Amino acid sequence: MASTAARWLGLAASPAFALMALATAADPSRPALCGGAGIVPIDAMTAMYALMSLFHLPPWLGLRRAANGG
Image 1 (cartoon, rainbow, N blue to C red):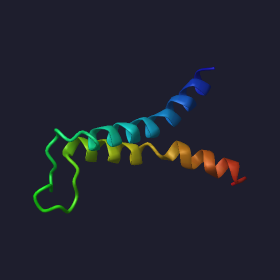
Image 2: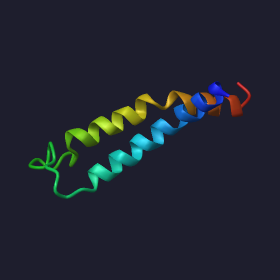
Image 3: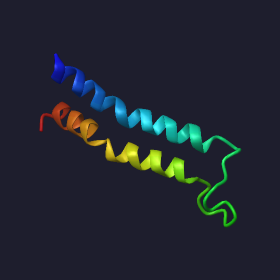
């Protein structure tokens, strides 16, 4: 039971951080890091949430590997 709950919690992290990144990126009141240059219109919190989403992808990759029989 505990391992099942841990597995679901591990799968919930990456999408949750991705949604938080989208929510903070969509907030027009937050100043952008590179807004003056127009290169990357994101702030530090958006970048942090996006990186955390990437760092929490391994459970999803393992799930995909298991689904493909590998």
